[in-house]
Image: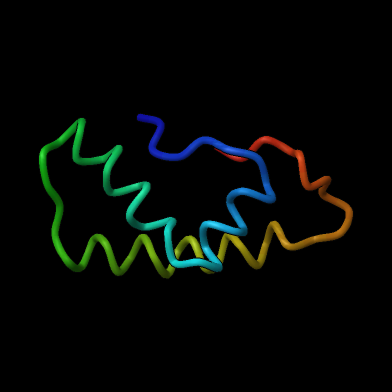
Length: 66
């Protein structure tokens, strides 16, 4: 199941603006209908970690992140 698709710069921007969890949740909801608060918190923490990983100057800003 693909819950987020975009380039690196969009992903980082979505995380910085706290929009990432809402975007992922909307896609997830289309497949499963709902989720729990703990799953959303876990997702938010994971996306903060992934943002740190992708915030590497050697990874081009237009690199595709799925």
